Image 1: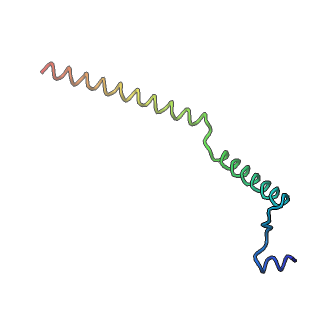
Image 2 (image 1 turned 180 degrees about the horizontal axis):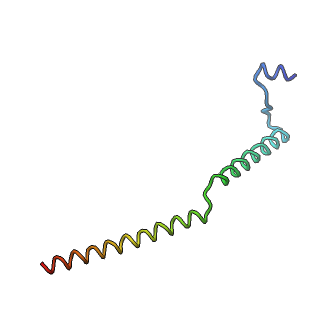
Image 3 (image 1 turned 120 degrees about the horizontal axis):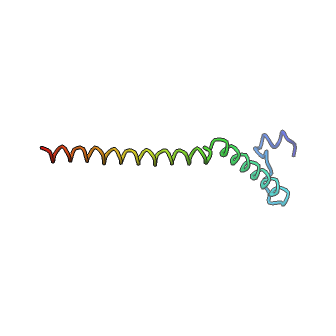
Length: 82
């Protein structure tokens, strides 16, 4: 079968179960998988920046809770004086 016949009949890739065909499809699948993982790593935030973000949120939470406690104590003192 020639290339033109394959294109006309939409048989542009072999679909038999021969070991050669399966090997080619396995190699192609591995290539696309590696490419996908490589692209995913490029767009993934680094673990250091993610860790710093979590640490920053934790510090912000601690300061917010301290502020809440201090303001509550100030209000309690004002209420006791009145």
